[in-house]
Structures are given as C-alpha cells and as structure tokens.
Length: 240
Image (tube, rainbow, N blue to C red; front, side, top):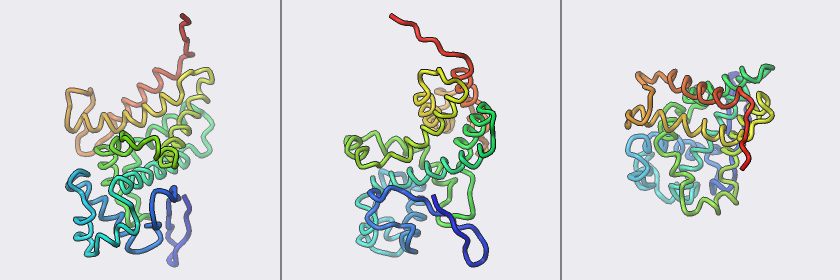
C-alpha cells in the first residue's frame, strides 16, 4: 500500500497488488477506477455467476473491449477484488496493533480488524468497503477453490492472503511460541469470519451467532473465543 496527500490535503491511498492480476493497473486511470467501483456494485447486486463484462460495460457506458484491456476475465477480476480487500485488512491490522506491546491485546485488535474492515473509508472514493465485504463473504472461496489454483498460486495471486495469515500467525506465536498450528489457526479465523456471517444470514442452523442490522459484535466474540481457547494454554501433542 502507498499513500499521498492530494491538492486539498486529503489522504489518497493506493493498494500495491501483484501485477499479474491485471493487464493494466486499474488504479492508474479514471476508467480503471470506474471498472473497480462498478464491478463491486454489480457483483453484489446480481452475483458472480450472472456477472459479465458485457453487463459491466453497459453499466459504465463503455465497451467490453475496454474492460478486457484491464482484466483477462471475471475470475481474475474477482481475485483482484479479494486481494484488494485482504491488503486493506492487513493495513488495518498494522495500524491497530501499532505501539501495542501485549500480544493478547494485539490478537484482540487483529480479530476486530478482521471483522470490521468492512467499515467504509472515504479516503478511497472508488471502493465501497462495506459492499466489497459482502462480496468477500459470498464469493471469496470461488477465488481459490478452482482447478487453476496451483498455477495461480505459482504466479503469486494469493501472496496477499498468505501474508495476511502470516501476520496473524506471528501474533499467535508471540502469545504461545510453542503453539504447533499458528498458521492453521490464523487462516481458520479468516475463513470463520466469512463463513459464520454467511451462515447467520442464510443458513442460521449452522451457527450460534446472529447478525442483525449489520452488527458484527457476535462474530467478533466467536472469533475471540475460538482463538484464545486454542492459543492461551500451552499446546500438547500426543505422540503415537
């Protein structure tokens, strides 16, 4: 991520993402930003399955060809949006744990960041984080539960997600350096946040939490309970 001051003193933030995720950097042009802005809104409105570049072109009053100059296909566009969100979450964790010495408090703040990254940030005018969060909850597994995941992983498509998980895992190791599964706990926390929001909204018998009026406090409580139940006590592995 990089940031700068604009000519009226406001902060302008730009995510630095893997260049293999796009053919032309959409953050560098007005059209590219419109593609990002309206792809988020349209995917949220109709779902990834029904989303097409033709429909997006009609929404932004442009052409399919102009969109293909930025992204190879809608799958890569989805991965780009997911990486954008993960990079923003990583920034939020860094900001919220800054100058915090107690690793348990760091983990609490990291969990809060996982849950509340969806809060709208006006310094990035072409991304509505709240809407993007709904896409992450509903569509994120489609980004990497694919036949081409190994090839895309080699191309670094998921470096941002892995870096985000490592950041959380490192905090877990600060609390308990002997914990045998810090990366598994970290990635599970990230997946749990999405899965249980989705369950609460659509399949409530699969979870014990509720999400009402966009209140995610029960999600945060669930993640804290899970994390500290596993991390606080020294772990023991039974040998065969």
